[in-house]
Amino acid sequence: MRLLLEGCKKNDRESQRLLYQHYYTYAMSICVRYSRSFEEAREVVNDGFMKVYQKIDQHETESSFKGWMRKIMINSAIDHYRKESKHYNHVEASADKVLEPTVGTALDDISYAELIGMIQNLSPAYRAVFNLHVIDGFTHEEISNILNISEGTSKSNLAKARENLKVMIDQANRKGAYARHVR
Image 1: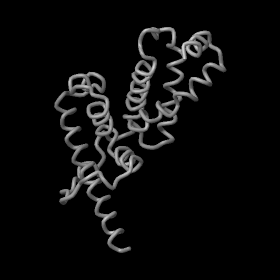
Image 2: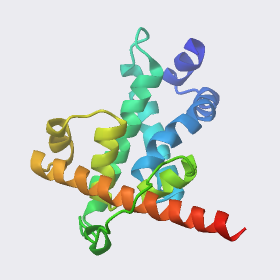
Image 3: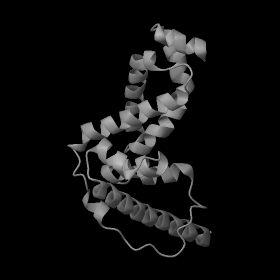
């Protein structure tokens, strides 16, 4: 890995290609959580790798490259969110309509891909706060600084994201139970 990173620091295209291939899946797993679709996530990943290549000299060999790259991918996703947020209505009409979940909102019958799809269906503001807080471990104070929102808005968006996810999970479980019952 050290030789690969040294090659990238020298702008060696083959080293950059190999680094991209090696870490693409990892980067995509981060960016897809912040994006509306896999296509948008791919765009964020590519932007993130461009930043990795441009800033590779800032990486210290003693620190974990994967952790360093993770921060860049998260920041690229947030940059994309900020750039696109002017096109969103910050709170989509359907995001405010939260149905009461019924009993049985377990994740047992939901695949990873289905769960990611549910996260992608959250409004951009809810999705960003949910990922930053729940998945990436940022505090509400840090999120408020990153997204330029108040801490209260961060907390509110997280609560609404969780409510919406509970409804989506409940609906998926009911559909699954119905499908099993029909068979």
